[in-house]
Amino acid sequence: MFVLLLLFVLVPIVEIYVIIQVGQAIGALWTILLLIADSVIGARLLTWQGRSAWRRFQDALTAGRIPHNEVLDGAMIVVGSTLLLTPGFVTDAFGLLLLLPPTRAVLRRAVVRSIQRRGAVARVVVYGAGRATARPVPDQPPDVDAESPSPFRRLPPGPDRQLPPA
Image 1 (tube, rainbow, N blue to C red):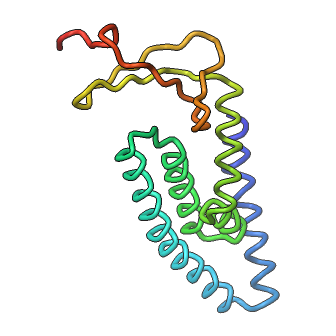
Image 2 (cartoon, rainbow, N blue to C red):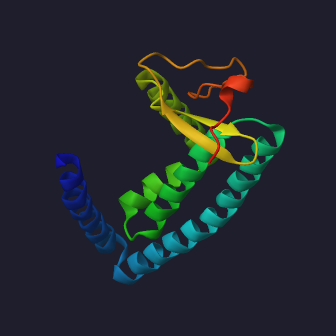
């Protein structure tokens, strides 16, 4: 609760301070034009990076892989573009970091390591035609495939993995 309060109070104060400082340095009109340009660039980056992430997501599903990296990329792209669309230079800097693929890859690895450290919260099992179930996982580290750094456990197919009739 304290963190949210701090974010909702401190971030706008910092943004206003930075906008005023930039406005004094380059002028009010140029500052406003720069903020508008940031928003337009953020919208374009959202389109380009979003399409790329969606294509990689579909490729992963077609290949039969768990699209964990693609899902994390998509989430970071949405958050980054939202930060770029909001007026302010500090949020624009963080948004740009989330939209650039090299920095996004570094942040994604940090998120995956954090998830692995905490352990899986739930296991999702998908059966055939899109039916799925989620079950709690005991407090133990998840099994990670050698080919994929996914924090999610892969379950072998078998007759004991069937869902009861609906």
